[in-house]
Length: 240
Image (cartoon, rainbow, N blue to C red; front, side):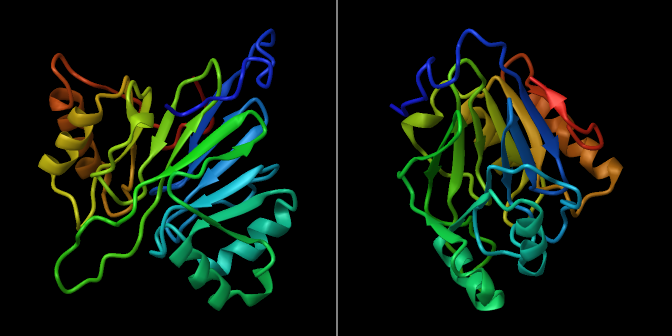
C-alpha cells in the first residue's frame, strides 16, 4: 500500500484545503494548503504567472506535456521548485536546455517523492500505442496523496497502469481525446479504476462541442448510475 504522510506531517488539527487548476490540455496545478505541484506544462498549456511551486512533474517527452523552451522561465519564476521528469523527458530537456542540468531530476516508477505534505508515487512504464509507425516512449503517471485529502492520479498518456495505489482512488484525471485513445478505451479506463470523480484532461485538440460530447460519454457510461465529472476548464482554482 502507498504510505500517505502521517496526520502529524499534515497538521491534522488544521483545516487543510486542496485546490485544482486546469492550465490547458494535460497541465494541472495541484495545491494542498501551499504545497503546489505542477504536472505536464506542455506546448498547449498556459503557465504564465504560476508562482510558489514546490515541484514540477513531467510524465513523458512529448511536447504537449513538456515544452522545453518554456521551462527556464518557469524555473526562474519558481526558484524553490524541484523539477522531476520521466527519464527520457529529462534527457530531452537537458539536450535542449543544457543550462538546466543541475535542476533536472529523473523520476523512477515505484520510488515515492515527498513535497511538503504531499507524497507523489510515480507509476507505469510506457506510453499508449499511437500506431506502429510511432515509437512508444516511456511514460510515468503520478499518484498524489496527503492525509485527509482526496487521492489523485494523473496518468500522462497511458491507460493500462495497474498498481495498488490506484485502489479506492478519489480523483482520476482522464485523457478524453488523443490519437492513441478511442471513447471505448477511455470508458474502459474509467470503469476499471472506478474513481469517485473524474477530471477531464488531454483536450487540446477539441472544440467546445466535441469536448462536451466526450465528457457526456464519461458522465453517462463511466460507471453504473453515472460518473461525476469535474470540468475545470476555465474555472480557475477549484476547491475540493
